[in-house]
Amino acid sequence: MKAICVIPARGGSRRIPRKNVRPFRGQPMIAWSIQAALASCCFDQVVVSTDDHEIATVAIDSGASVPFLRPAALADDFAGTTDVVVHAIEQLALGASTHLLVCCLYATAPFVRPEDLLSGHALWLAQNPSRPVFAAATYPFPIQRGFVINADGHAEMLQPDCYHMRSQDLPETYHDAGQFYWADRTQWLERPQFSHGNVPLILPRWRVQDVDTEEDWRQAELLHELIYNLDQG
Image 1 (cartoon, rainbow, N blue to C red):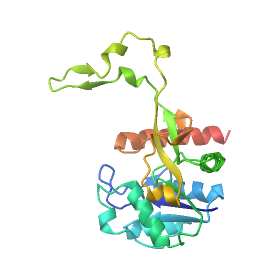
Image 2: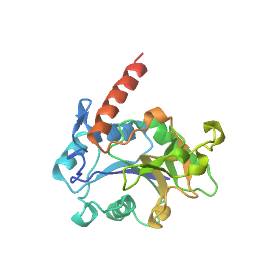
Image 3: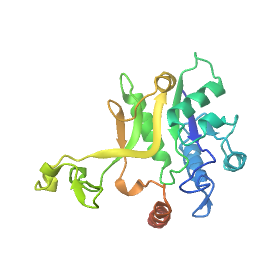
């Protein structure tokens, strides 16, 4: 089955301006995702979907292809990932008769490894019938004990009945790792929700990190450097 990787990377990120091409441990952030996709050797094509000429140049220099530019309507703060992937499928015009498996890989996933992508690919293929596969990880603390801060500035538990329960008696909970999503052409066109009813590939928590704020960025760089040094022995 033909497999392509689509990496969404718009130019208008707000919380961390230009984060897709901002240097992260010596190279543009997006380069880490492109290199992992190429090293996995499971894709016929690694495509970056962007509206931005600088991102396109960086992507090409990193080994990806940019066969089209994304329209502005799919590059604002409200554009959904699924719509971007569907647009890429349509633009690539591979033909409905082509058996096509598509992995959406985020541009801000410097912790993703080639073997993770391969594991997601294998998990999708191993099912009968196959369901969309996505990367996930466990929460580090029981979310049943989470709280919000109300209008008075006071803590307000989301599930007060769980306050006196032992951590080991609470069910383990998981979250989307925000790294990659495997589905075939038909599944993408059906706009899948990567949660209920789909199949999670569980990653170790120490290799999952959102990068949405400056604090996230600094933490991610420190953790990434530590992991790299450990891997190098």
